[in-house]
Length: 269
Ligand code: FAD
Image 1 (cartoon, rainbow, N blue to C red):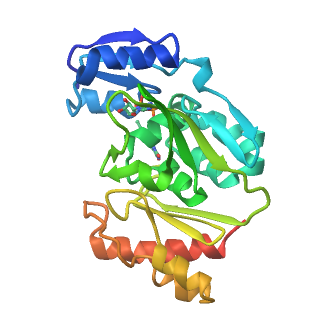
Image 2 (tube, protein in one colour):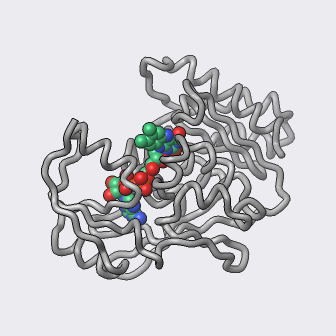
């Protein structure tokens, strides 16, 4: 499949990208790694007339510690996250999840900001950010605002970003030495999750159990109330409305959520 014709502009800075977004309006889309956007364009599910490339902006790449948080540039690739000593030490769940995305080619091009903005409920990094209680710094015409992961995912492939805004940095609480578990049930190695579960410090996040990544609140509350892992995990699918596709029907997804939540809690490292 071939994408509809489009123009390409390489932004010179994040501010320049915002100016370009403002001047091109709805016709424009940001381009980071292109590993979600370009397939959508080839399938003609997206047909922006202008792509604004932010994938090479040094100011949007890199990882640093800032107090009790890690600050990760939105254009940082999955491969960089997976290999980062800082992320592996302070947010190992995130490094692990990034290392499970697609194949090496995808991990070398795909970015954390692109993955979060794309908001695929089956994706790895949105579930990881939700489990970790992270947030994003969003740049727009009115300045910078911080959006918690809980509030970022608004619907199926939809975020709460306003037109003309971009994710600049991702903030992740530093959790060195805390036990965590990460499970995804996949058709092929390193594929999108049919269902996924990530657990850390009493928080449990689920992938592909609804239109957005979700917290398994009933299971979390049971754990906090002293329930065993097995008892809590039985509640992991409560309140979820997973979709159905050729990989799994709703009942099977609910079963997977219970099994994977239990494994994520039992096999914490
Ligand atoms: P792009 O494709 O460049 O952009 C995606 C969307 O986000 C676009 O709408 C774009 O305008 C917007 N955007 C990009 N950056 C920003 C920003 N900073 N602020 C606001 N909006 C922005 N993902 C998984 O999680 N798990 C998998 O197992 C997996 N397997 C894959 C297998 C294949 C074959 C492919 C092609 C992709 C796979 N992916 C998987 C998706 C991959 O992780 C993508 O790279 C990622 O979802 C999107 O990141 P990107 O940088 O490529 O974004």
